[in-house]
Image 1 (cartoon, helix red, strand yellow):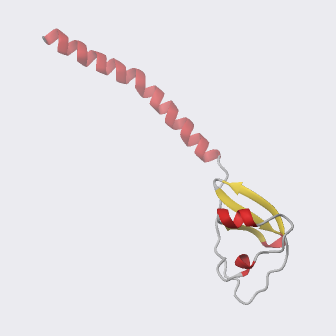
Image 2: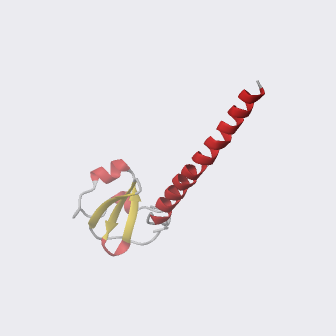
Image 3: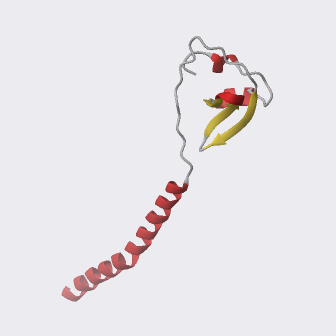
Length: 101
């Protein structure tokens, strides 16, 4: 009985010694992949009193976020439905001209 328990304990210790480095390597790889991702900064602007004019120059999906670029004004984050409505070359949509867009 004592030999069986000792054998089980030794097996568990050996298994943990073999599996621990694999888990550490997996976590390090996951962390490195996260560090290498481009960072996105989202600003909320107040366009009250300003008229935005221009055309959509680019559409992109970055980290599952739908981004529309409008000339000199920069990038705007929009919903999937809005992203699907907008085409490159279209004038800036009304929902991007509103306050807090």
